[in-house]
Amino acid sequence: MFENAFKYVDDVLHKDPGCSTELDYVEQSSWILFLKYLDDLETDRAASAALTGTKYVPIIADEYRWKTWAAPKGADGKVDLNVALTGDDLLDFVNLKLWRYLAGFKESATSPNTIEYKIGEIFGEIKNKISSGYNMREIVDRFDELRFGSAVEKHEMSSLYEDKIKNMGNAGRNGGEYYTPRPLIRAIVKVIDPKVGEKVLDPAVGSAGFLCEAFDYMRASKDLSTEELESLQTSTLYGREVKSLAYIIGIMNMILHGIEAPNIVHTNALGQNVMEIQEKDRYEVILANPPFGGKERKEVQQNFPIRSGETAYLFLQLFIRSLKAGGRAGIVIKNTFLSNGDATALRKELLETCSLDVVLDCPAGTFTGTGVKTVVLFFTKGKPTRDIWYYQLDPGRNMGKTNPLNDGDLEDFLSLIKKREESGKSWTVSVDTVDPSTLDLSVKNPNVVKDVDHRTPAEILDEIERLERESSEILARLRSLL
Image 1: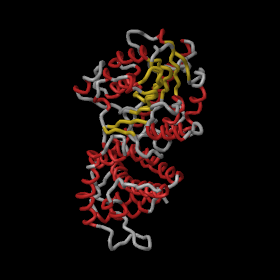
Image 2: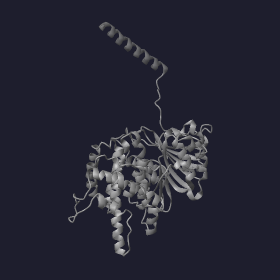
Image 3: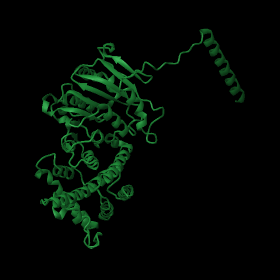
Image 4: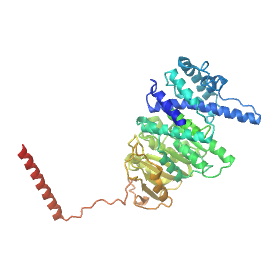
């Protein structure tokens, strides 16, 4: 049911002149899906209030509720076609009335952590791109068939939504920056092992893959008390995102995973002075994949002691200073960070203020559609680095859209990392052996044996003479044919 609905909506969006890319499909699906979710949420809350005899005050005024403008029902429970808006009437209502009403929630919300604030933020930033009111009617009718009631339904829909995000990432261009392969995220979360009661931050949250996986991991870690479930819902997972499209995708993804009011703030995390971060603003866990190859303006670079136009290098400084003592981080970054001369000072800070425990080297093709070679850095705040355990991930095949990374590819890594075991793919480097002038931490597997030519000089000369004779014979035959 859910899969057919998503496919149907994509087909409708594909023929709409206002939507031309996978990014558009996800964005436009998301805001409509979000409003359907809100209506189901309000219905559930009203029913719960009725059972306890308390009064429920709706979030959305009746005129703007889904059941009023999108799916007004008749006595038979079906959409009343005589009342339901369509065509230009529907477009005018959405663009001129609904959008303005919902965008106003940002100003009236009591806190950025409320669902009201999320509503205002989303509709204050994105725009409706569906240009045909008839197409919109088709989409609304199909999404009205979906239900967000049970955990099973939410799980199925969240899986399908993840697939849409993955397709957007595979579409290339700037879609790839929103999607980190989920098997890689799951492996990172397992290694970091976030605990219920710890605060987890992703300051470059994108589609919220790290926070969603952390939520699922902690929820399944043990039987949680009511207080622990409440803490996991409201005061454990935090994200920041600067781009409007990623913001709504991240919000929707967390909602579908079961988090009612995600703590994602629409802001540039690099806009704060990292030297002014206080203890109360620090976290036990940071999980992130900062943007590849981004560039920041000079005024943003002023917020960091080590100035750099490379966005990822600024984010790494933010990560280090946002961790509490003993806090752990799992960070995806371009492999050039390990050897780039421009990052020497940053590597020095990382090695001196944190224990860089593990470097996971990811093969080309891990991030489909980008061609970027990456590593994952696992580090602990508060003590200098002594030894670094390296693991060179090699699935034994060329990876890409048709052969993506899977959970099985990471089983060996997850097995060996428990005791930092050495193998043909893993080894340990003492920081004492690293060149102090360059602090080059490049991945250099000492277990890879280069082919050695064991022939004697005489045998090599004989081979050269044989090849020269063969070449002369071939040239002679070619001349005879001319």
